[in-house]
Amino acid sequence: MNICTTVEEMRQLLKPARLANKSIGFVPTMGALHAGHASLITAASKANDITVVSIFVNPTQFAPNEDLDNYPRTFEQDVKLAANCGADIIFKPDVACLYPAGDPTWVEVTGDITKVLCGKSRPIHFRGVTTVVSKLFNIVGPTNAYFGQKDAQQVQIIKKMVRDLMFDIKINAMPIVREEDGLALSSRNAYLSPAERKAALVLSKSLTSALTAFNNGVVNTQQLLNQVIDSIQSEPLAKIDYVEIYQLPDLTACQAELARSNLLAVGVYIGKTRLIDNIILEETNVVDNA
Ligand code: AMP
Image (tube, rainbow, N blue to C red):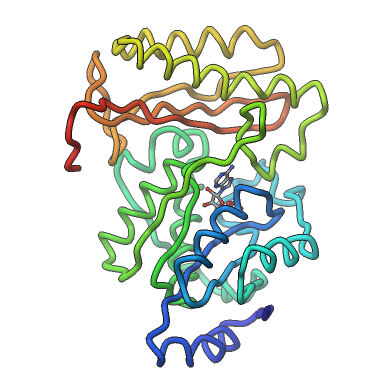
């Protein structure tokens, strides 16, 4: 497996694959890799001739009061995990490589899709994500890119960016990988104390019980939201950032009664750690052409 740190090296290394018309699978990450990332890398390596994984803690998607400096960095372990999952190239640029000096150029998806959910509590976050993902797409030139449904809003925003900017890249959204007890895997789970780790289960539990209610015929949007809010508020270590439902794919407002395909998403502080999780509430008897 190759480890590259510059744009030039990446271009040279990928040139033969491009000339031979080989498919390139790409998995962008911030490192501290876990089984969630592993599922993306494995999917990429199964479906493509070459698999590239980027590891870059992107400063422009963190606000000054957020955890950029403390974000877990475990590069040696990451290399082993990526290699075991079939990665061929790791791209590990430094900040100066992706953000040359001078005023930055931004790629920004506008509209409600970037303003609700995480976009509301982290106003600059998605502009940072779409900017760095565009740069990485231009460097790697993937055929397929892989993103986790764990960051469901990010997936929809990236799909819109790819459509609107005519990137010739297929975006593959992969299911959320969870611990056995239901907690969605996240690099930020490393911040949790044992008591907080237990409390963090309230996210997946509240979402699963909302799904059960929905499957049993509860379609009233507010009733479902209230059920999730009550459940999270019953956990003393949890503080709600948001509990919301939006229609997929563009995260538009829902009617009083849910129809078609909807994203129920939560952002919750467990102690000082902000965790997110989500579930899709989907009418199974309606053909969704969206
Ligand atoms: P990150 O390193 O947190 O930026 O995540 C890199 C990619 O891994 C993103 O597309 C995430 O959505 C995805 N990812 C993170 N956690 C999980 C998970 N538990 N299951 C599936 N994908 C995940």
